[in-house]
Image (tube, rainbow, N blue to C red; front, side, top):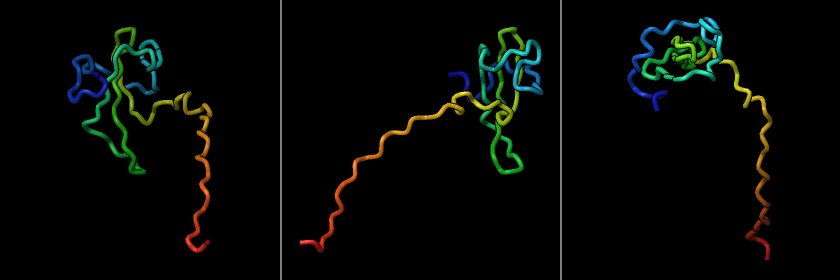
Length: 99
């Protein structure tokens, strides 16, 4: 999988920094990208000691762009309620002093 390859693919070389999390040329969302590569070899630490990475995208229009991982908009999957599994059945409490 190219996204987590240790060395950057050639198409990342001309990438420009996007100020918004979309292609600066045609404004397409990152989900429509043809290719993705995450620069996990050199994370940057934020003020609150969290890591962020450069995420590179090759857009449908042929332009390569990158943005910081912490600038990615929240996933619509995070908005959905998850159904929790039922709790395990209760087992009777064993009291060793009961006869």
